[in-house]
Image (cartoon, rainbow, N blue to C red; front, side, top):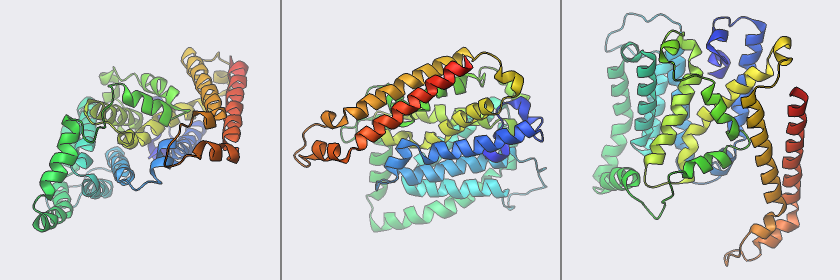
Length: 351
């Protein structure tokens, strides 16, 4: 998606054949992929046995497939209700079905909220409803999901009440298994879990000027990936912030959107023209860089004294000592401090 439609701005989407635009598309694709692949939360949760990673994979690829179908410039053919949707929309329906089989209604509720809000904002709701062939897509969705739920209900009559009620509805409306947290919990999760790039998210969102719907409605679909990613991130963040039960893994589905926003931001910075490079550093970039440096220094210090921060646990009484013996905390502290020093040099050079 980034390689095809990862334009840093709507203006660059109007000149996709320019050499700078081509470089920026490649940078955005590689950066976005790297930000997801090396993200702390993705690395940690991918080594666990929870279903959140599978949900994230199905939901994330479904969202990208939807946008690829939406942004496609192919002219819609004459279709009736029995015609299969376009390939990317078809892939979207298949992946959403797998997301629902993985985690239940949340697999379609969240993508539905994101897509509906985005389409209403850009004034494309009814056009996409027609071209995406909702009736056929709904039939495909039911054909994939219903057999499993019917068969498992026949085997266990209490399954639906437990799965849909306890594990979905009750987790949203009340505390389940003691997993409660304050309203700002996910701000901290994103700040730490998306380090060191989380500090650039506010700038990456503000630069979109999302408060100008008339502007975005005039832009071609191919130029709207950044706006789509913003809706993706904000709605998932708001949804789980409103939920009473809170867990760090709930923010996993928004990581790809965060990666897209930051990748588009930095791909624009890294492919600036010579005159643009001679301009003073933008205050937003400067302050984001300073905050990023402070966070990297804090992480370096925390790693340096890491063994002493590990409390006593009867299940692993020697964990702190074993961690200290590996010397990994020193290596980690050195890496993060080196990154902070490098960032300082870059900011001073471009000031």
